[in-house]
Structure formats: C-alpha cells, structure tokens
Length: 361
Image 1 (cartoon, one colour):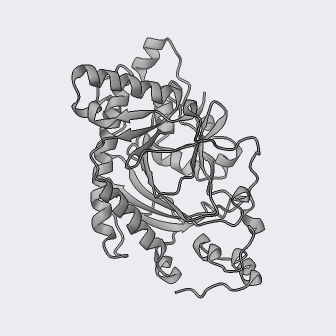
Image 2 (cartoon, helix red, strand yellow; image 1 turned 90 degrees about the horizontal axis):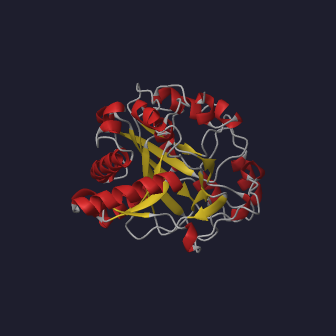
Image 3 (cartoon, one colour; image 1 turned 90 degrees about the vertical axis):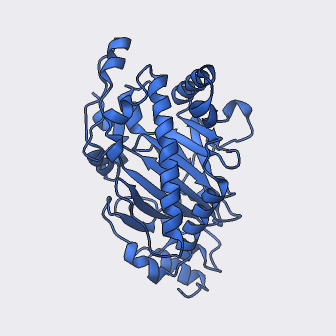
C-alpha cells in the first residue's frame, strides 16, 4: 500500500509528479488543506446548482408502464419520454426491475477497485481510448489545462464482455449489471424511437445496436478541502445514444436546464438517464444532448457509475430521413463513425468547440 502523505510539501510534490498520482492518494494527505494549483477550477458564481426547486427537477419515467402497461399507459409514457428528451435530455427511470442490491453491489465492487494499492492498479493504466480495461486519474492530463478531482475506471462490456480479475467478485457483479443495464437501455431506445413516430426498433437497427458499444465507467470523487475551487468533471455532453447512471449516497451531478445548473436528486434505486450526441444527430436537434457536470464536496467520497451505450464503432449517425421529410428540414450534420467521434471528443479539437459543432453543416 502507498505510504500516507504527511506534509504539505509532500502533498505538493505528489501533485507535481511526472506520472500523475491518483486523486485518491493526493486527497488522502493528512496535510492537504487547500486545492493544489493544478486542480484549481474557476466556476461562475452565478451558476450554482439547486435541487430544491420543483420546476427544476428532472422528469420521471415509469419503466414498468413502458414495458408492461396497457396500450393507453404505454402511449402516455412514450409521450412523456419524448417530452423529457425534448425539454430536458435527462430523466430518471423507476420500476426498472434491476435489483437495488445489484446496483449497490456494483458500486461496492468499484469502490473496492479504487481501494486497491496504487501498484496493483498500474497494470490497467493505459492511454489508448478503446483499450478493453482502462483506469487513471483526471481525464486527459496531456491536453487539459486543469486536472479533475476524480479517478476513473472504464471497462468495455459490449460487444465483447471484459472484466477485472481483481478485486474478488468484481467480474461476476459487472457481468450481471452490464446485462441488466443493457436490457433497460434497449427498452428506453425503443421508447425513444416510438416517441419520434418511428418503429420501435428503428434506431437500434440504424445504429447496429446488436454490435453497439457499452462501457462501465466508474468515477471516484474523494472529499475535497475546497469544493468550490475544484471540479469532478467539467461541463460536457455524452458521446453515445443513452447513458444510465447510478451513484452512492453522495450527489454531485448537475444538469444545465434553461441556462441554470440543476443539482439532480434521484429517487432511491432509480437510474438517471440522459441522451447523448448520437441521438441529437439522429433527430436533427429535436432531442438535445444536454451539458452536465460533476461537482465535488468536502464531506465524503462520491462514487458514480455511468454506463454509456452507443452504436457500433463503425457506424456513422446521420439525421433520420423520415424525420427530415416530415419536418421539411435539411440535415444539420455530416456523418462520422462512432469511433472517430469518440476520438474527436478526446482530442484537443474538442477544447476549442463542442464536438457536435465540428459536424454541423
């Protein structure tokens, strides 16, 4: 196990290491009382999140009614789903059938991974975007101006399932969890298709969903001595079709809605779901991929697990011809394979303007 950090000088040295140390190790310094300069992030003081305003609560979709309700109930939920995609881009899904104990087991398994000694995690520290298993700190220290107050673990679960051999039990839990979340994501995608007046399997077929990419992405945000001066993940949109997210008891997800940052409060056991850039392209901006961010706190560690689901890597998203014809619109985007789009999001070009703007006609 890595030795404890006992002095402010040592904490500063860790922050300046050539091989960037994990935020878990840095935050574990007994002497750390302020955010090191490399991690100092300036937020607009007028853009604080608020979870208490009922007008700014993400919509709720009852999954049971979407999948097994009466025709009337299903039609009503599909209408609500379409409205949520159009007005928010985020919603919470309840009654989805995934056991809450499985969700908690997945969070605990990821927590145990982050608790492994630094040396044991090093074998998974790679820089290749699509390596089957990848862990690290911040996001991309080679190009970012400010380091992020988070460590991450990303494991590709579909089209081929990959897993860790440590910690014990991780593989079994992640296999079951990835299968169950993919089942939920599949039904949500069907509902989104129908909300657009298309056949239920239209988007899945167009995006080669059967070969689609699914990633289990765990984020570790330790308590921060000055949470107003650091950021877990800065404002961004997701690159895929739909993302399902769970978190431990600590909140921190903020969504930009009507030019305000809204702190998301999800019901216990619910999935927080958002649509990604590929859906915005397919719908020609009817459904928008919404900016969101992860803020940190000074009380306790937050762990979130986001599971983005995307097309197959060789599939380009293009505005759906039937929707263009119905709306009398010209396409607003050129095509790009999902793999190239993900590479774009991880490149310096994404720092100059949003990825979607690189594809806009």
